[in-house]
Amino acid sequence: MTKCMCVFLFLSICNKGINGYAQTAPGKITVIDSAWANNSVNTVIFRKNSLVTFNRVQYAAYYDNEQFVVLAKRQTGASKWQIQRTVYKGDATDAHKDICIMVDGAGYLHVAWGHHNQPLNYALSKSPGSLELSDRSAMTGNRENKVTYPEFYKLPDGDILFLYRDGASGNGDLIMNRYSVASKKMDAPAKRIN
Image (cartoon, rainbow, N blue to C red):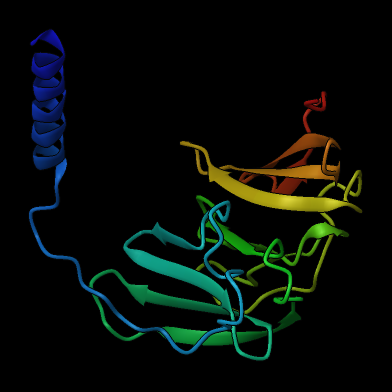
């Protein structure tokens, strides 16, 4: 009897929790364009920040059918996307080589792509709100030759953290860089994280 009551109570709490936090308005699905679909590189579970929002503008990134990095943006709620195929290509046949993006507090789009123990692929938009990217560049110039699992995180002050694994599976370190909106530079913290 006690087990049944516990299960009932658990399910009641779960049901209330689900209903209490469910969306009240139906979502809207929009199609950006066709994309690479020969594996899961555009949708892998560990992928962070493939869709971000800044000042009511949504930004998306994906590989197209020819494995080029594609950026897109739209006003939130709009159905039409502005699409920009970049000059950068990734090896989309390896699902580890996902794309991650983030917009900093000044409106610049940061893009990292194509990493599975690879040298860093990183570029920044040429101006705030732009989908046109700068040349590929280093972040700090240190420990950027064996990058895997890149992730951007935006801080409350608009600065950005960039985390990745440096090294191979079972023999790598978590590296964290910080981009400062004020200085427009990426710096590494004093310590590495093992």
